[in-house]
Amino acid sequence: MLINQITEKECYTILGRASIGRLGCCLNNQPYVVPIFFAYETGYVYAFSTLGQKIKWMRTNPEVCLEVDEIATDFQWASVIVSGRYQELVEPQYTKEHAHARALLSKRYRWWQTAAAERQLRSGDNIDPLFFRIRVDSITGLRAEHIESPAA
Image (cartoon, rainbow, N blue to C red; front, side, top):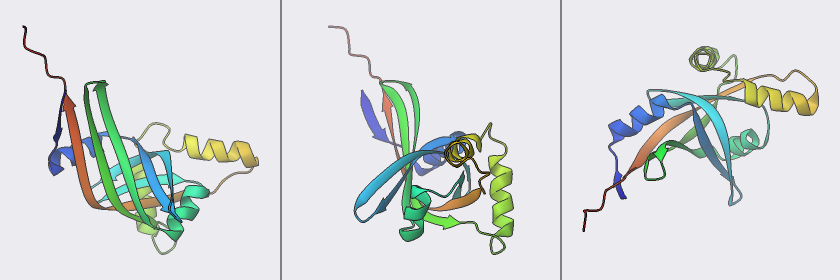
């Protein structure tokens, strides 16, 4: 197996195809990683959540990362890491951005279901959606390729 760094352009292409990633945040030197549905558009990753641990942590420490994979086999995969800054899209201050996030995410199949259903099951109440975005500060990636051994 050969592992190589991929170009920034390739990283953005992979990010644009993906809809599920792992969001990493940190508070008081304690990391926290959770899966999220998202949509990427130049410069930003847009996501939906409900109020919980990750939102509380990101409000305190907005420096976050997002990891995305494309896995064909154990020996053929690509992995991209976005580092950036959390920004909550509260209304009325971010009404335009909030609507934009909703429009982008609504193109994804059942983008809202996991976060809303999980919270509703726990509380029994309707939950207000919380939209946020991550400003992309940097992006890096690796690709693994299977290399056949020459016949002996």
